[in-house]
Image (cartoon, rainbow, N blue to C red; front, side, top):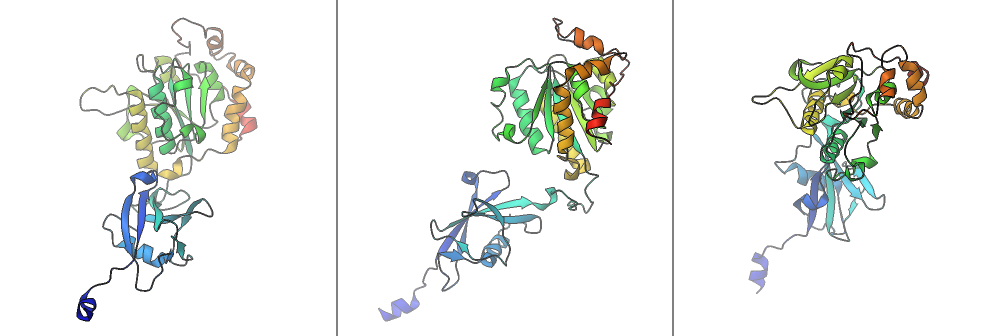
Length: 334
C-alpha cells in the first residue's frame, strides 16, 4: 500500500479562466484550466500565474491584447498586470478574463502596421427617407461598433418604436440618433466643418477615396436611392466596388463605408465629436426658425414650404448650394 501511494501522482488544484474578447458575452467565452502550483491556495491566484497560463495558449497574443479581469468588489473590468494583488476565486473557483485589442485604442497608439493614428476627428452617418426599421437598427449597431459619433434619419418612413429590433447591443443607450423631418432641417443642423459625403452609384470609387477627418455620410433610401439634388449638395459622392450588381443593401453599404474609413484612417478619426459639436446639432434642431432664416436666398427655403409633398421629395437646388451656418459659428467656432 505504501509503494502504491508513493507511485501515485497527486492531482493539483485548478481554477477555470473564462476568456472572452471585448464585445463577446461571457456565455460564449472559452474555458482555460489554470493548474495551481504546489501549495498554492484555491482561494486566490497570483496575476503572474494567470498571465503565464494565457501566454501558453496559441490563440492568445499578449503583445496585441491587453488582459483585464472582472473585479467583483468594483463591479467592473480592471487591467491585469503582474504587480496586481492576488485574485480572489474562493466563491466559484473561476476568473473572468477579457482581452482588449490594443491596436484599437485611441489617443496616439500605433497601429499594427507601425503607423500612427490619423488626425483625430469624428463622423456621423444616416439614411435619407429609409423605409426599413431593420436597416436602421443594423446601421445603428454597426455605427456604434465602428466608432461613429451619431446616426440620423431624414424623413424616415418606418415605425421608430420598433427600430431597435436588430440592435442587440443596445446602441441606443450609447450612441445618439437624430431624426429630421426633411433635408432642409438636416442641412441647418449639420455639424460645422464636417463635409457631407453621399454614398451612391456613379460616385468616386470608394477604394480611391480619402476620408475627411470630420464627415457626415448620407445614404439613400432602399427603393429610390439618393436624389440628384442631395448628391449635388454633397462635397463628395462615393460608390462601392462590386463584381456583379453594384446595388447594395443600405445598411450593408453603410458598414462597408465605415469599415473603409476605419481601415484607412485608424480609430483615432472615430468617435471624437465634442460635446460642443453635439450641442450644435441639438440646439439647431430646436430652433428651426433659425434654419429657415439661413435658407433665405439659397433656394432651400422652398424645402420648408413643401415638406408635405406626396412623394416626400425635398426641392433642394440642384446647383448644390450649401446653407449658411452662422448659428454654428457661434456655438462651435473653428
